[in-house]
Image (cartoon, rainbow, N blue to C red; front, top):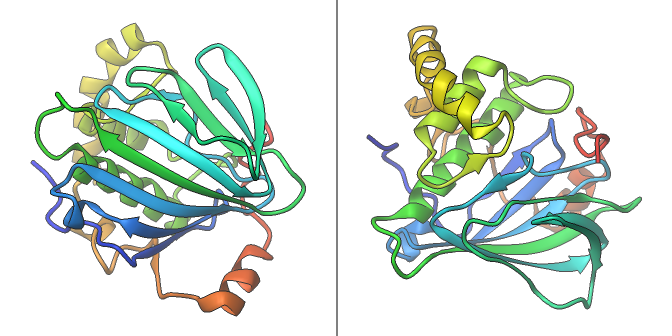
Length: 228
């Protein structure tokens, strides 16, 4: 089962809890579900969802402005504007966050591996919609993460395109099935239509240059990168 609306180029989205503002350049709607490219602005303190693995994607990102900290396998480093494009091979643990005092601007792409079946970029974009929408609704903790039932449901539903490294895989295998079933019974369903599409809580109108600057100047509700 899948959400019905594919994210299209030109869509803007915002997670006020983690301080991430994005604009889709190439969406699943334009790539037959095989590629997703976006510009992402990270407010000071912002970070992506946490260390994870893509089993069906090659991920690339380039820092256009500011400074980004990143974990790539066992290697922890910083990258800035002018540094080479960073490539994350399929199956590699990775994580990244704003490591500077100002706004960081990153262009990132996930592209389906040649042997990956189906439309994995569509599924990946759906997972982003859910996580960002929960942040926009305030259904997250101090680190910008939803509650354990939501996390279990999201991890279980989208395990084909993203796998978190915490808790350990053996714990996820044992617990996430029952927890995700309980989550859905309590309304925590990642496929809920209200979390996807043009009316999703995370979707915003094109802010324009001045509006984007104003948005990025706002404080981050959750200091997501604090733990890094």
